[in-house]
Image (tube, rainbow, N blue to C red):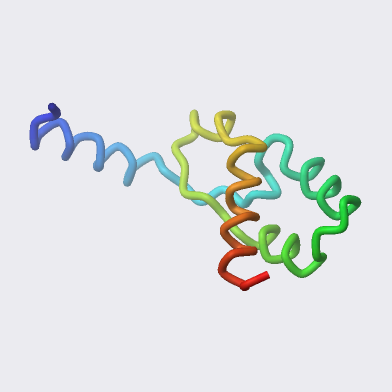
Length: 82
């Protein structure tokens, strides 16, 4: 179990190094979104996702992929009641 000091250091590192990264700048997102549009997913839903960003550490940019994009889309569809 992490100590309070370790947790505080992790939070400080996140605050110092983390940044908002638009989904459109993440690896594979544009190809994924184009494929979803071709599959008939609503342009409005994809446009909404296009406008989102994720708060990430620089080294985490490369760890985000199709599974996360699919989850975001599923969550959005659920929120919209579609």
